[in-house]
Image (cartoon, rainbow, N blue to C red; front, side):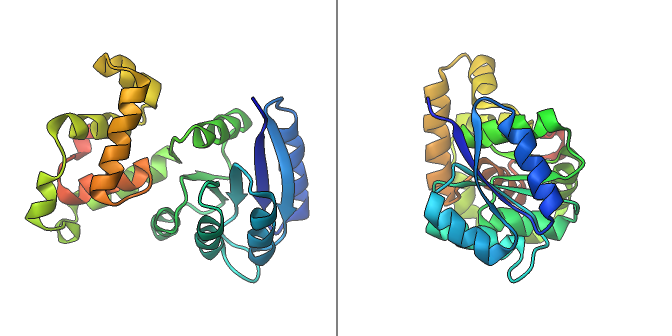
Length: 221
């Protein structure tokens, strides 16, 4: 199996260099490009088609949100991880809506960052736990975000159960063990869920079910 190719986009050269050196120490990770601003990040992503792009929120020329949106348009298979000093709810929600599959703060431990990159490459979603709970809590109480009654009939009970476990932060393998089914079956259910809800990630699916009221705060970690 080849290495996970990575693009790093951050306007601080020392941070980019240090992060690149840290990741290159892992045998299965390879930093293929580094960008100092959003425009350069989009250009390099289109050129190298990295498996994972690590993007800062605040960058020159275009910000990390718009950079994420443009990279996902040009390179749909690239998983985006926002790595930011800011845990503001609007930033996180905007990043998810733009197509980011992960959002972590820059105070994350090195081992957690490496694990997050591997998880994103495997199709998982990664969010800073504290920030995620604040967002999910707000959405769970925000009745005005709910969609029509017809939408609530789209999911089967076992699909909602899978989303409940996803909301707890469980991986596909952990969900498979919990429900005594295969990982492939979990993946198939998630594909069906994404199709029904017209979303593209686990996080978007959980946000949708919270908006609809199908999950409650008790379902969160």
